Image 1: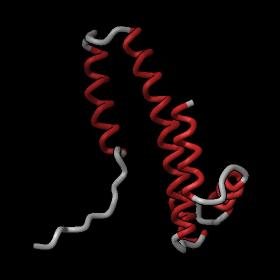
Image 2: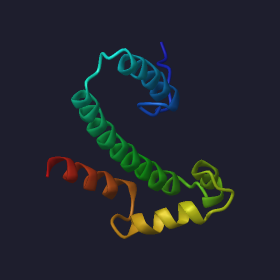
Image 3: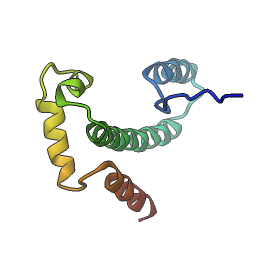
Amino acid sequence: MSEEIRRPRAPITETDVLAWLETTAAAVQAGEVSAQELIDILGELRRASAACADASDWALLAAREGGASLRQIAPVFGKGYVRAPAARLEKLHRQAQNADQWLAILRHKQTA
């Protein structure tokens, strides 16, 4: 028996978010969600957005460490040139030299 090896997937996708948004918007329009609940949701989304950005930064560092070129990474940034990922890497390298260090920083932020 061999176990199927699967590549890691993002914990949430654009499709997931849109489906949630459609459902939540319908509940808001039906008056089933209060303003305070929307404020609570806003806070959750802002924290999740920051966590996604941190995870994206980790993946960028890990991809470079894995041998990906800036030209390979650039399309993910929505640009046809390498300046966007290069600038992000430069900024990240002021805090961490590799993906493991970045993960350690994220763990520390969570416990602080």
